Figure 1: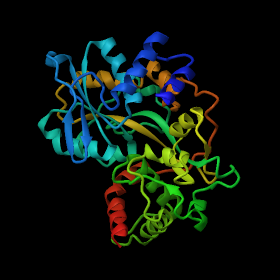
Figure 2: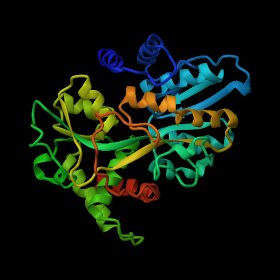
Figure 3: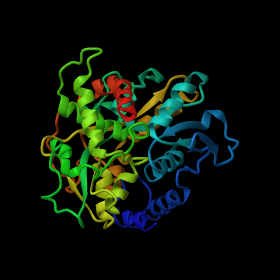
Figure 4: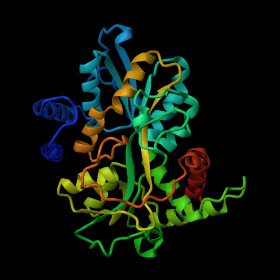
Length: 372
């Protein structure tokens, strides 16, 4: 609660057309609702089970929308509430980890009960592109060049650089790792917080980035994965069997001193720093990987027109300004400036298409290394 109130106090100029009082109210509601949108038929994953948390209201079918999301409630709640307010469309929300949500979509889209996947790195969305229908958003021409999908199978939502974090009570900035290569120094063995890539889309992005940074961009000969296997093996040795259950636990482990350093998203690091936690942030000197998260129209969407309205809404100026000014996320729009607390960064080439194509194989290699 303390952290959320601090974040609301930092919100100077809300981008959405809501009064400050309503923004505060919605944000507090998001905390109490945890993973429930409060807008409808929200299910939460508990182990291998999913449960309903609210009764389904009697809303006409043409005024409904079913959104599956891997975003935290503090991100999706204000957006969905405002979308409902502006359009009169009732949003049923299902929330869970990126991989769990996408696997569920893959198993269920044939039945026509899902409209939108909201969240997840676009390289992970690419690996599930058989589940999506193309849709070109109304303001697609406002998207920063290079951030779009090219085939309209997903729409970028925000740009998310990957950063290193460290506990400032244990390390100085100079002592913390400065590059991707330094993560493999033996002095960090057992001291890195990293979430299981089978549970976390962010962790798969990080793992894929490590492989591309270390193994290079040369094409892989089928059946000869020596470089990838070598990188995975070396990184797993650095972790010494320690895996956080989810990406949200990474900053917590670092702040608590359970691990000395971690790998996470810039927006996560900035929020924890602003909340007064003992966390510092470093942009890798050998290049920053920044991958957008996205939103995609699910095949056989039962409320396609409403889904298209939602995709248009999440890249609108109002929503993008809200994310920049309140959620420490970089905009994907070319006509909005990022605030000064976002540093200029040197991006490295990251092949999102290759990352998506390689995901099944990389995760298989990860499991094989775990078993050895």
